[in-house]
Image (cartoon, rainbow, N blue to C red):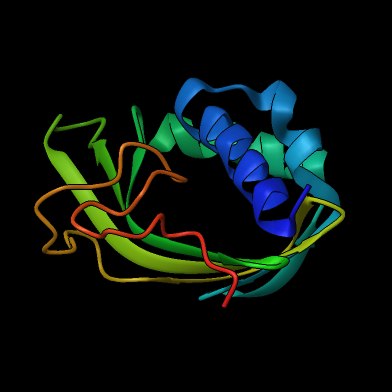
Length: 148
């Protein structure tokens, strides 16, 4: 199986974690340690601690969805351009936040990530998102999976 196929399978499972609350799949997605480079600094989490963080984040952002507009897989690397979408739990108004995230994988699991988020209310101008994280990019003839 190619590295790109392994990566695609991983992000298909990761989408189930995010969109279907399949936290039982987190250990199949996150390596023994997962280094996160975020605006607040660098930190290392385990699959268990990250699953707990995800559950807590879902409470603060009910119904959060990840709309992916562009992505690429190259060997053990992946990147995504996306927008988070959820409803404010107090006002029920829609909230968005655009971002980009790149990943490094080890043994088919998330090992390290770099994430950059735009301010709350930001959104990419694309008219249509991908159906799934690993779907072809709308309007592109290629499959968005590359062997560069």
